[in-house]
Amino acid sequence: MSNNAEQKFQPAARWRLILGQEAEASLSQQAPGGVVELTEEERIMDAALAAIYGGEAESGAAPAGSKGAGSGRGAVNLSKWLGDVRSLFPDDVVSVIQNDAMERKGWKQLLLEPELLASVKPDIALVGTLLSLKGKIPEKTKDTARMLVQSLVDELVKLLETDIRQAVTGALNKRQHSPLPSLSGLDWKLTIRRNLKNYDPKRRIVIPERLYYFDRSRRSKEWTIIVDIDQSGSMADSVIWASIVASIFASIPALNTRVVAFDTEIVDLTEQCGDDPVDMLFGIQLGGGTDIHKSVKYCEQFIEEPRKTLFILVSDLYENGNQAGFVRRMRELREAGVRTMTLLALSDQGKPSYDERLAAQLTRDGTPCFACTPALLPALVEGALKGQDLAGLAKRLGAL
Image 1 (cartoon, rainbow, N blue to C red):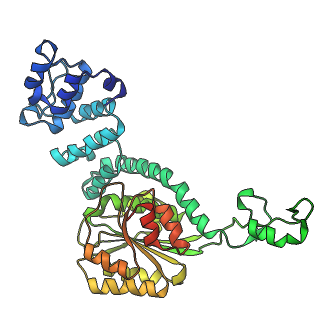
Image 2: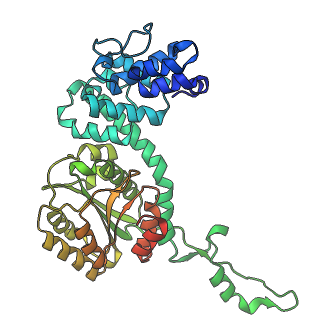
Image 3: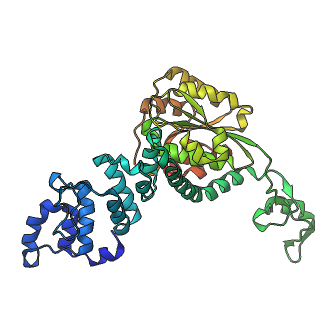
């Protein structure tokens, strides 16, 4: 709720907004004067909430001047409703209410009319719904839909890009030395070792003739990173996060990034990833079955130097294809030197549902499987590129 409104709420009014119109009678008995008084702003808030969470008697938005909300039975004016919600509630609550409107009331028309879509606040869940409906979006709405997705992409890239770039360059840059002065890049061990001959015993210090620095230039395409994304409907949030992460990988010169999405069919999104992450997201088709084995087999063609390849599978592992073949191929990748990990979920949500038996088998074979928040992924990628024990690292980071 808006900060100003939250400060002004009386206890009875707060409970009235939480519990709805059905609780008004019992709350009135405990309120001063036997009446729960709502301000004009509170009545509008109550009407917006009742439109989604009220019963049949509260299913319509009440007129602004009526006592209590949801007393009307008329159809909700979605444009006005969206405006009320966005003006009266904080952003995180707006996202919840919008998504509940689609889930509880089936208000998918929020995403099909340009004037309504323009009023919607973009978030992960809403964009996931939008992508699942993209084949049904009218032509007149497509530009607005793209703007909404672009807004979310820009927000997520801004959130993740710096940490991911630092993680990758931190893992790859300490290779060669350069005379370029940079205190943060000073190689202290080499500088001391090369200048021990200049030790001054009276002052008990080393006086260096030359300083040595780590080279901050990156060799082009030093590593291959393959992001293999399960686009089945249960993976919607993870698909969006994984796509954004892949687009950031693609922008780093040291990485040769390949992006593949799969259900029972395979879509290679590498070109779209490098050109425009929004195009990549619109290239994803949420829903359908799952054939992980087929996708891993397809990705194998991109592995030229196994020991310089990181394979990231994003999947809940509910395999409808060849499970034995999938496990064998993942084991062979590990044995060849490919660094592999399975992200059972890449999101800020709770514990995901996944095939525990298959995850345990992959883990025994050397491919750790864990759910991961986007904030933890840069450290895991850095650990993988450095050859660290990912299972141990994930446990220390709290991903396991």
